[in-house]
Image (tube, rainbow, N blue to C red; front, side):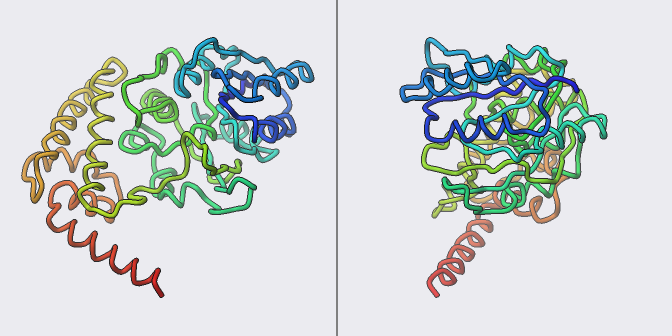
Length: 328
């Protein structure tokens, strides 16, 4: 068996950390190291981790002296990888007992450089909320369609705690950009691998993805909670500006054809901020970016970005119909 490094970032995780570690230690695939970095927890997480480290020699724990934040904490863990294959883990989920084995087998069968899977969304008591996170987020429309950069270039379709990847790409991944709250570790890692290697999706939920009040990153659907169209559109534009600004600032990571597209895309989305009714500029850029989406996403995003006067009417009609339905 090939040894795998599992990277687990913790912070104030005393409530659920035991369940997560136990689920990892109970895996059918036994050849792994569990490398944990605690980011200055103020609860009993440190004490719990020390107890586990004494019980199992596969566990190695680092305690940070100052708070790094979850992205830089994962970056620290990535720098500790010694074996050829690694996985990421959050502190509050529960892994299905065959998660490592099934992901590893699929990585080998497909000759891939990164594999990610689906998740089952559960509440704090592990009761199922949604059977498929990727279908909830509509990522399934892309997940099986691409194994190159198009999968991850516009949307973050890969949930970090599901991925397994190869160490050889870390030289291109690190350091992880820190200037955007949208381009985080589980966005950047598969993006870089997809531009240089092969990414595959295993359509099976292998994690119970726990949702609770303290999640730093959780299951939030696009448009969730927006009551005003302007707020929704501004959010979409803000996200895209942040993404492409990060791409431009880290252009060394991109091939020449994407470097040029990144610059043009950033200008396109920055221009949209001033267009409240209709935009006539950059439609060719929009088409280059979204031409691989299905027709529904292509048209709906086109209206939101370029003809908001129409998209606004559709938004409020749908909001009213939803209100009437919920009121019955």
